[in-house]
Image (tube, rainbow, N blue to C red; front, side):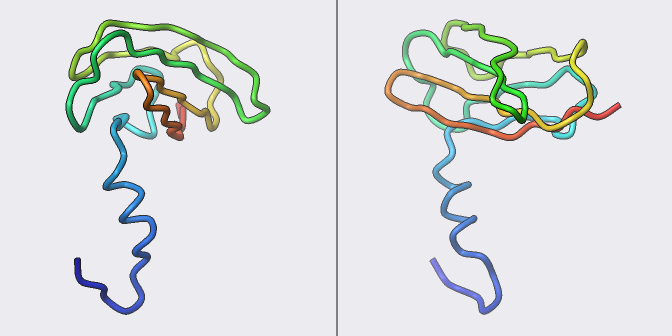
Length: 98
């Protein structure tokens, strides 16, 4: 890996190790959670939290490359999506905009 002056190398390393991605982001309510690497075995649990840390949604689904979720009834704002797949735990930011 080469380093170019002025680039944030840390954020590049963090995003490279990320197992999941969400799109579109920002979203109007419906978004896709996608596995970027190998599909974990077993269920994938998804929890959605607001800015205050209140749990708003908890769901799980069988391992698959992508899964659609909806936050259409949620107010516009910033939410945190916690994904648990086996021993992997990852938190992603999601913006809901109208």
